Image (cartoon, rainbow, N blue to C red; front, side, top):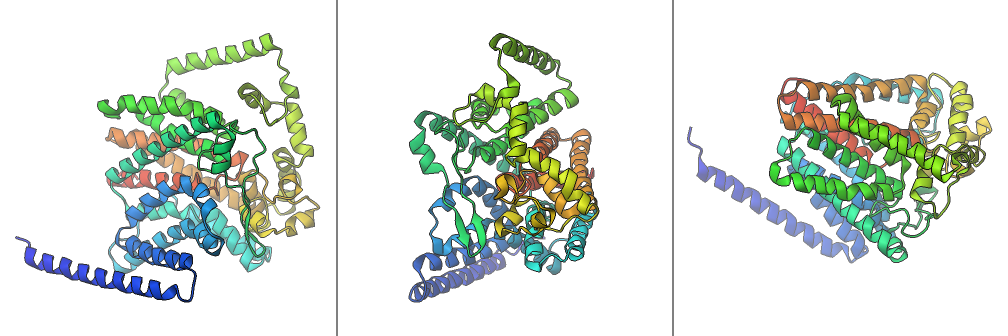
Length: 510
């Protein structure tokens, strides 16, 4: 059948006229709005309306822009005026709900069908148990809603990606873009190391922002020396480190699978070599250990690389040799503003540091209290979402559970969070809820391994292997801070996980 190009042209012309008329009307109302509201607020409103229209037309483009924007968000928010800050602060999160709305609209209109995934049952069970926990514990509805949001907002991206089903080319372009951003952040890290205080002060988002009693942004307290722990545009050294580690693991998988085109191999190895030292300069042990676990999983468990095994043995011997030669007393090391790289590494194993963290109400204290007091007081259903250990309870200043158990209010007795996402969910959702979340997470990991083993496409195999490795890194990160809630890491976990499921479905694997 020969297409009717004239009718297609007329339809396109009609759509262009409608779009032009709508844009003109929007500008007119915008100019009129400046009479009653601030220009900043009007501009923000116009951009929001345009963004909504664009997202309904091109949702995968919006998802792409969303992923590319997040690493720069902490820095960009620093310059946002107070009258629109709350909109800017939650704008990226609202994009998630907007994309979810687009998916639901397309399902209702029949343009896409509901797609099953291996995570469906576990996700529904987690949500059900979280709601039951809120009801059983009679959590204030507003607190419960914000707590549910904190746990599940980025998990929604998995189902959004699965239903939008972007092309493999889209996924490839996204990965290349994110690796380019990692390279840029690495360059910025080198600059911070050299320039020091002026660049640190320019980049760091130090101001605290609030809306009534709700804490919008805590601000970053730079307790380290200028130029010592680099953080780029991500606000904190640990956020830069975990972000870089996630995508460097993906790059390692692609290099191991030898699917990088020959003309780009030099760039890929160069980017890895360029970024690894900055990963070290970020001084994030969570990122170091996460990347190491993921790398050894890929190199030793999957690829059986004897070169890496030999290098690991030599590295262990060098570590013990260094300790014997220098006489460094690991058990006496504590954190300091001008800490060296080696002291930062060995301090992770220092008994004095663990002791200081316990008596200083740090992470170790909350490991003990979660197991010894918080979970035993409500073992099955927990204390309810928005009540313990996470970002929601910190933002709300909700001390109810802490007061009832006779505990200080989170880390340092003032912060609310406990620097451990896993134990935070354990305290809020109980053993049943955490168990269901673990099933969901493990299911996605096993899907990645299955796609890696069964796919006939080398590029898909590399992608699935990289995501599986990155999931192990994120698991370490989540045990050492609230990274399953962090915008600089969690969205990528679920976007990339959803992408693996999409690729697996196209080959009939999932």
